Every structure is written in structure tokens, then in C-alpha cells.
Image (cartoon, rainbow, N blue to C red; front, side):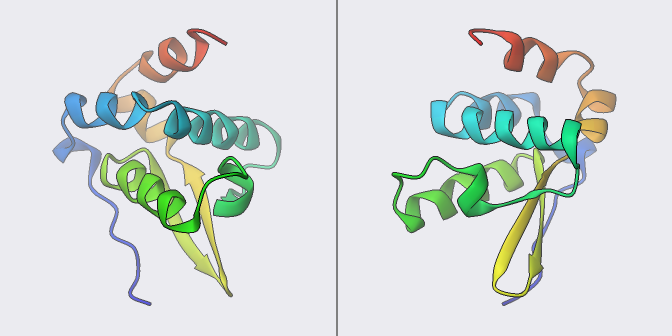
Length: 106
């Protein structure tokens, strides 16, 4: 498997970030990753971050969209893919955005 590509957040448009966060499943994934960041901060495997009932191909698509929008970093660890929210980078690029989105409707 080729290494994951992570965009520079300076190249990511706000519309891409908002699109990625507009889907309820992706928003839940981001919430789980943000919660992990507050606890361990090492990241979560896809199977732990995503809702259980989703097919693997759908989960993979959601993580691809989140990674393309600059919201997450992914790394391969054995047979697992570990994902971490790029909270610090996102807060620097779009101050208050994640707080507003994650706080809404919770």
C-alpha cells in the first residue's frame, strides 16, 4: 500500500472542509477522533472511529474525503490504518471552526 497523501492546509479551501463535515457519518467520525485526541491522542483505527453498521467500502470513502479535506492524518500500523484529527493545524488555519461545528447539535 502506498503511503497516504495529506494536503497542506494552506491549499485546502474552506468549502472542502465544510463539505467533509456536512455528512453526519463523517461528522461523527471527527467527533470520535476529537474525543480520542482529548484522551490518548494516538489516533483510532477506522473500525473504532466509524459507526459499526457501515460497509468497509463506505468507511474507506468517508476517510478518503476527510483526509482530502485536510481534517485527518492517516498512518498504516500493521494491518490497521490509524487516523488522527489534525486539530491544531485546523484551529490555526480556521480558528473556532471545529469548536463551532462540533459543538452544534451535540
